[in-house]
Amino acid sequence: MALLDFFRQRKSNSAAVAKERLQILVAHDRRGGGPSYLPQLQRDLLQVIQKYVAVDNDAVTVNVERDGGQEILELNIVLPD
Amino acid sequence: MARIIVVTSGKGGVGKTTTSAAFAMGLAERGFRTVVIDFDVGLRNLDLIMGCERRVVYDFVNVIQGDANVGQALIKDKRSPNLFILPASQTRDKDALTVEGVGQVLEELGREFEFIVCDSPAGIERGATMAMYFADDAIVVTNPEVSSVRDSDRMIGILSSKSRRAEQGQEGIREFLLVTRYSPERVQRGEMLALEDVQEILSLDLIGVIPESSAVLNASNAGSPVILDRDSNAGKAYSDMVARYLGEDLPHRFLSVEKKGLFGRLFGG
Image 1 (cartoon, rainbow over the protein chains, first blue to last red):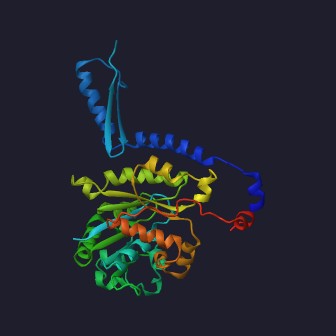
Image 2: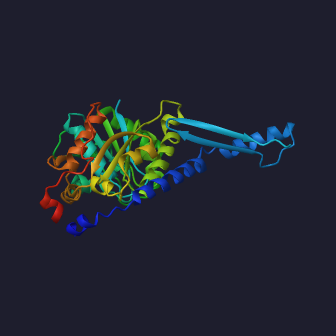
Image 3: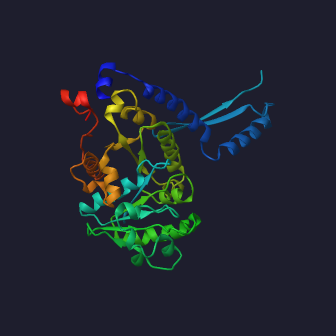
């Protein structure tokens, strides 16, 4: 077998596929998971904003992303035109 | 006060118990009073890997429930005078581990020992969360394989949020990456995630790389931590890992393909 492999010089590259899939998956997992207070924070923020501006119920999105040792809390509010 | 280290991974079968046994033995051999605790209630195996399965009388749950004291449950290792094993219960259910109970046992052990190594079960249920809750340091064991890397990433997230240190607002758990079952040959052929890829995805400090090695199965067959197989690459890699944990700066070994002669290339080796 080793003799055959030597002549074939088979180069599979499943590792590159694995890496690509993992990078997407891990980024998604990190977004999806997030701290347990996120949904409540999102509801509370929405309530406060709706006191002042008439925004839709899906106008507020909250995300936590980890970048090395840092956590970034990303808050996105869509105001009506 | 003892330093508490959890050996964790999320995924099963990646080498947590092998690592716990080798790491604890390595610390003990360097003169530190060390205890290694099996948190896998219901499926204990650390006793087998340590070769003391026939000497288990009382277990971790017996101690928590007050049926025995810590001294009665600890098993003294026959090879190193500094090493003790606290086995898990084989019969009770994992809910027997409570924060108060585990905390009390760890506090008591902390007066006697310098290092407490917690061998976590797979998964993210009670045994695993209890093993990590009190930890100062975590060793995240990962195989260069998609499901293991993904689970490790999940564990890293849980470590940073569900520990006593996190709850009390202290400095977080120090986390280290240990890559096991690494095969430079397969990496070279493009069949296995390279070390750099795993590190890039998990972004943790690398404490060691354990090469795929037949010595690991031999060691578990014999009930002898693989670090004691000093001629094996896996044993050497674990020894390096212990040294790095204790602050030594050693280069990583066994990362590239060993050169084979023409004979080896033609006929495999």
